[in-house]
Amino acid sequence: QQQVKQSPQSLIVQKGGISIINCAYENTAFDYFPWYQQFPGKGPALLIAIRPDVSEKKEGRFTISFNKSAKQFSLHIMDSQPGDSATYFCAASIKTNAGKSTFGDGTTLTVKP
Amino acid sequence: DTAVSQTPKYLVTQMGNDKSIKCEQNLGHDTMYWYKQDSKKFLKIMFSYNNKELIINETVPNRFSPKSPDKAHLNLHINSLELGDSAVYFCASSQDGASGITGELFFGEGSRLTVL
Image (cartoon, rainbow over all chains, first blue to last red):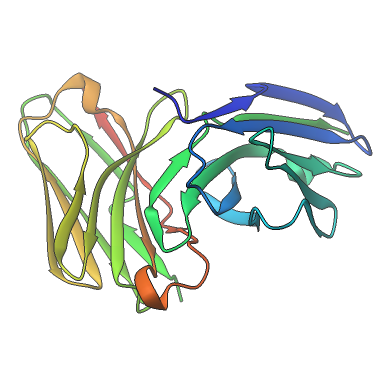
């Protein structure tokens, strides 16, 4: 049973456009929702994360929107750049136990110049 | 100064061989992990160690044996390699429990294993 569903699987966006990746979770015990960014040949790295007590978190061009009642959260990349081309993973976990992180299947983002 | 480092970065070997991947973290974290990323880029946890104690052991063939000599090191030994073991293996660490801050996972750069 997949606990975190991520969509789309792949996304192509023009430079300057908005990239949106969506995730849905099932376990209401999750209290930490990070997004990881992975470039080819590298390991995933934390991009931005949110807790369920807020509905939005913004860091530069990256924003997480969180809907607790719908059990959904999404990543918005404003003014997408070719350097943003990477694979993005959403995850859900319990803050005090990152080992219980459940990852989405990943979204490969390509930003065309 | 790499936070989570793993070696080797690439392994190419024949079916039936045994291989090991080493991992070290200098973040002072209590918990370390091995993840497997397949050709579709799906990330799946294999093992988790907290202060040298195994706490997560997902459904992984017993040909895979992790070993943690101390909390800064977690190695992965694989016996009798099979074609399906070809993947990228990531080591990661986190600081969990009462002293946990963010629940963030810190990943190494990965070890790409190719079994021929």
